[in-house]
Length: 264
Image (cartoon, rainbow, N blue to C red; front, side, top):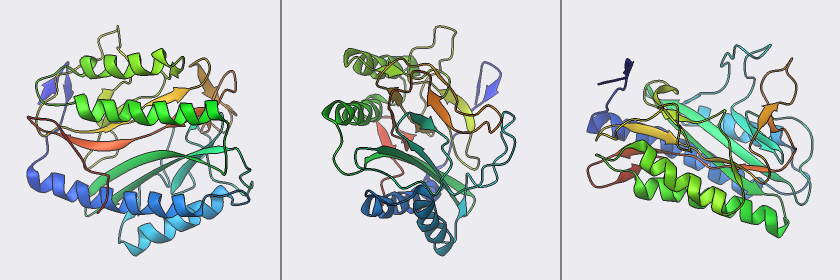
């Protein structure tokens, strides 16, 4: 189907089940990472866990080797690990996580030709109550989108509910990065903003659409930039306030949405 000159690829029930299988691997990886996160663990250790599990499942790590026109090198890891003020695309490294940190882990897998993609923000030990509230609101925002998305609605209706929830809590919605269609490729049409785009970035939800919905929320101002423009990967809040990121892939149906990245 087309929309504004862009082609949105609808998926058959068989393709949706293949995407669910890929999403199941992602869910298993994130569950294993959740068990390992604690003070003293490095994000490179978490990446090693993901790399091994994806290979054992017969999958391909979607992120490894991805090119970015802003970056000076391809993405070098299986997961993105974004700590504290890092919003997305953080590169795993040897720094030990500390008590009170938060880390957003984004994982993508291709299995039998179809993609799964999901993210969660984890607490490292005990975190400040206001940071916990940031995580809670971001997770609730994704839950709102999943609950509100169904065939026949305009995406802007769903995005408006997401934006209202975030801003009512006093937090910011990142504009520079949004969700996306997904299927055989990690990034397909349409773009899926987490806010109402006044420039016309909107589309009608249709049964068979598969979307990666991923609210990215900041505790302070929503403006973001690259930590190191020469590197071109790790995205941070300009005011260095903490950020949270939650993501699921959903298939749109006539009566609601079906989450494909929950696992068994």
